Amino acid sequence: MKNLSFRLLWLFIFTIPWENTVTFGAATISHIMGIAALCVCLLSVLLRRGKIHIPSLGLLLTGALFSWIFASVFWSIDPVITLKRNWTYLELLGMVWLIWEVARTEKEQESLIRAFLYGSFISVVNTIIDYAGGGHAYNLQRFVASGFDPNDAAVVMAIGITMAWYLSLLARRGYAALLYRAYIPLALFAILLTGSRGGFITAMVSLSVIVLFFTRTKFWQYIFFVVTAGVFGYFVAGFIPGASLQRISSMSSDISSAIGIRKEIWLAGLQAFQAEPVWGVGAGCFAIAIIPFLGISIVSHNTFLSILVEFGIIGFMLFFILMLYLVLNVKRMQILQKKFWIAAFLTWATGVSALTWEYRKATWFLIALLITQIALNKKIKADNEKDQSTAHNT
Image (cartoon, rainbow, N blue to C red; front, side, top):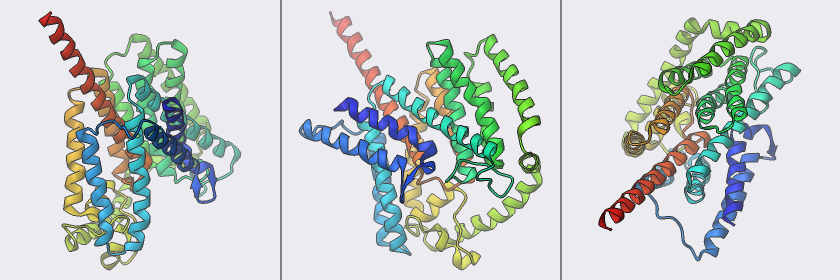
């Protein structure tokens, strides 16, 4: 039963990067896979007579944050919107617990990273197919997989870049490492096709961190970077639509204009926060909370501001404490794990600074996996210390 639970969890994580491409009515493919994995896991727990793994501090902090989010329906400025958003958060909490309960070994946790990367491959390929077929051109100059916003898709693919390089260093076979590294130029190509400036910046952050952090890189791997850059430059020159390149190249002037627009949203958000600083306006209510100050309903385009406004200072502090817990424990990890998680969260933080991702699966997949990996590392360390103590006593 545990093996079935893990396989369904793997398929669930695999579908996250391309979930909107395949839908069944209002339900996405990842929604269905997630429910299936959760049901099988709950059945497994029942067969074990209700025995579950003891929650770690990280999981308890996550539970405290989600409890506050659920409770926000009682003081929300629009309880109907909050109740609807809370269903999404309930699913996310189920995902966090599912990863905690099922992915208990280093091999399983590494496999889930691989699942997300393979899913990102699907998103990359779908974006390239969209461009080649001219099917779903977004605003006539941006291409993206069907069902996706180009900015969201670009950030997902950028997160995959860090995962690809990390997995290539762990790969035991040369062809596997080559497959993972092949993702990087393909993802960059697809990100440029989306015309997402935020996605492009996020990808550049990911690549910069890879170059700075992953010191295990060998000479032939640097050669791979140089060759990849040359091939990628050729493809950019010959295949990327001029309109997409122009959108990226006009980044400095357009970003000033975009920041000007978003600055108004952010200022309105701060005014909404000042109106409800302690409790917040309720989950999902940022857009309507700023209407009195901006005159229109629009999302925050900044995950951290959205958390502050919707959940108030208490909810924001719970989120901050959770992040602090993760950071402090990442510092104690082995060097390669540490570098991967720093790179992954720097990439994530860059991307979500211009997106509303506090209720997105990709955000909570990263957090849940890190919480689980921290717990495993502590268990391994405790077991090693126990073995050493036993050997010393004998």
